[in-house]
Image: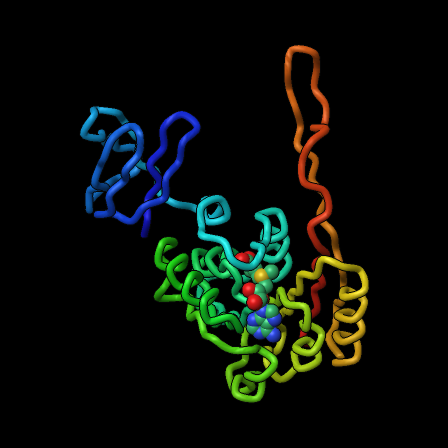
Length: 242
Ligand SMILES: C[S@@+](CC[C@H](N)C(=O)[O-])C[C@H]1O[C@@H](n2cnc3c(N)ncnc32)[C@H](O)[C@@H]1O
């Protein structure tokens, strides 16, 4: 698994053994680098080693498809209960941030990405997160793969694609009894389609949620919700196979 080298407002994500080259000098990350250890460049400039965690994947992965934000991933984890030992089917992989979170939680993930170049980047991202043994990034269009996946009985199905409704319609063939589907969709129209597909497929507990977060600012003048920040991201629709 990769580590972060941190100093003031700088953070670099590198594999152990990799070389960091900055204006502060050159340094090879020790193979046995430990969290909290201070390492120095050839110019004697210090960086602190930090172990990578989920939010670092969002901040530092090479990006292809727009990654899901930690606040929405929190909703996916909380509402599906995805955890160690679960079998998760995910599409599309994109940058792979959701897949990495699921893998770090101990789930075994099969994730489909139709763009081969994106899939290659996602594989490298899984290696950085140390979950390449648990997250299987496959190139393919999920809608073409469904018939070959119906024997698997996944505990959780996570979808972040425009055509998610097509897959939701087949969720009863893909999920284990009691398993959840979670779909991220930026637009209301797409969300309506997903809800309709879930109901039509006979799934239970169908609900769509939007997470709105307001960061608090605390300064000398007073305390209030921040006037800046991210607004709408997407809707999350959950449903369950009885
Ligand atoms: C928004 S990104 C997913 C981001 C991802 N959830 C993350 O957290 O990094 C959507 C990705 O889905 C891929 N995609 C779209 N439709 C697909 C399909 N039917 N099968 C497989 N991949 C698909 C796109 O190429 C894109 O990379």
